[in-house]
Image 1: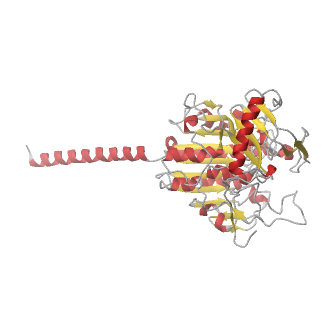
Image 2: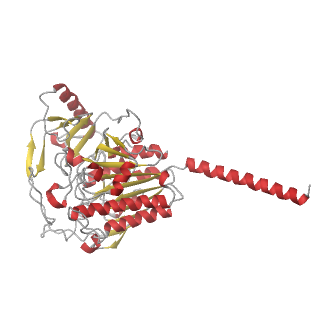
Image 3: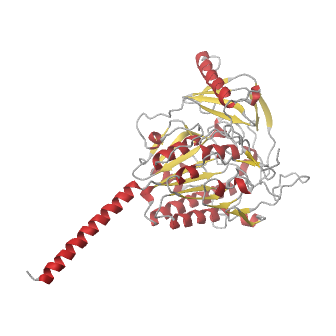
Length: 487
């Protein structure tokens, strides 16, 4: 045989063997590479403010498609019906009272999420993830509390709610808040957001998310997209102004849906769609006080700032092609505190060393038949450590407390709030949410055995995390961090 031919054949065989080895290596790396995670959270969006949940007056085609290609939960909850407390629970996997974050932190707050608490960003960084965030933080605006100090490599957004600024029509003129800043990383890049700039927030956040995806497509990443909308005051860009039949609120929701579509498009364009878990939810229910500028929690009772279902039950959609079955409706209960341990499982990351409250709900997300949330019960606290509800299975116990309501009256118009009235729940109440999600029939007198069981669960929670309504201190509460010298 011709020596040159022999040499050429040998080279070809070697090249082929190397190519096969490289392809095998790529396949192994792809199989071993943990999935990307995108968590999208809106602000004050109602349970019924997505097409597949019954939205009226506006369309959400991208969210509806996401639900059709994934799973949506009908009984998904936050740990408290208010901003900072809810976000602390989502990011740490803990009830907010465990980590010392209550209510909604404002521009005069001197505390924030403690650096000892491990966020979902810090969990996945143990596996070499790139991490980014855009949007509303609301867990401490001082430099040492910002996202880049809590596991996020980069951040663009507002430090707290977009109504905490001098342009808010309901502010106290004798005690106005300082200007609302836009922050990049740990640096203020725009010291005073204007109403015109608010119109661009949803677009800015979305563009940041898309650029992050493009820059990190070749490595595992987590991105937290926390929209400032539809929290009042509402703002929308020109591309969606007057597009809905529901006025400004509908326009805002259509733009948020557009944002979801842009994120999903970026995943497909960069060939990582099948390797990415995308989650969509809200931080609490609608702020009904604002009427036409608020969303809907129908058929649930009440909304934000209450622990009735309309305040804590929120839309939840998850999509991961090939891993989460398409078109599934999940009726099992779950909470935002369950996201951190679930993300830890699917990324192969160790759990925090400090105790958390959430449970791994991957079987629920994966649509495993007869899967159940492993937690025996879930609880909601409001105010400063006031234990208000216990949920176990289909049963919900309402503990004595005071809440504010409109009593069925319409809310405000043109962005101005109406007036609440206070109601006292004097005795414990019991509802079967499987047959009565509107919490309309109190069964406390008919099911004493259920009352006894749920009250025992409440007592167990009080021992662990306290109950200010009964002047009970918990044995396992952890403190928030404070700036030096603050009370």
